[in-house]
Length: 313
Image 1 (cartoon, rainbow, N blue to C red):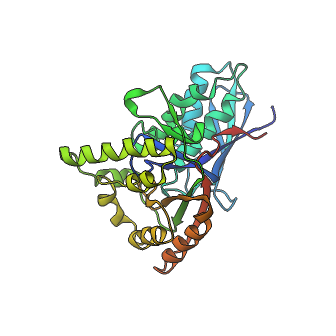
Image 2: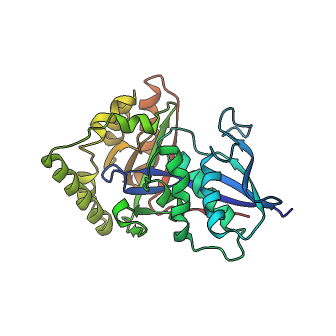
């Protein structure tokens, strides 16, 4: 049996406020690892799943048909494998149901690790459809906003209507992302069910305008426009009630100088964009506001051009 290949895939900020289901940002400092090696057999098998504490995870499945990493890896192996089987180990570094792209990170790390075992590995962009198979199992749809940035890094626009095209967007100079994860969980599928099935033309136009303005603000490093456009007028009003400390944390971030602050994915994590020099103070302010509500938390500070998934060894 061959030695293990280890792949890392970063956490991510889904939606980035203005781009529901189509815009995502890679996050430095947190991510999942998948170890893979060739074995006898003809399928992907899961040897173990370990949690953030390094111990065997109490309830994530080692059934290869029920794990996002193995489902994604199997899709790639079925399409491009050259015989034999693959054993993987999943080491979680992203909290579950955190709004940080936990299932996407596992799926991406799975395909990147197994891709490295192929005689002719695919280009990284070509791994997207296989990673999406794992994410589809977890979230019930082909949602790209976490998978794409975790795979490619940086700020990625990937609306389903344009797939397989992935668009790497320019990021503003001197801007950091601050992500706060309160010790809460929000189930993504449940969070989708509370969203309205239709919205008014007025709201739709407003959100489209904010998205277009945000993209231009990032490309031009226009901080005033960034602060004006980092808003979600459609999804956030329905989801923020799931996060007990939302109002306090977002208010603290803005008071400390953030351009804006809103949910990361479906929450409970929240993220702010800010000037690099303000990031540590804003992270501290967000943590203090969260803990003042009796909720423990953790924060990360990341550049907006964080790298994507890669083979580590």
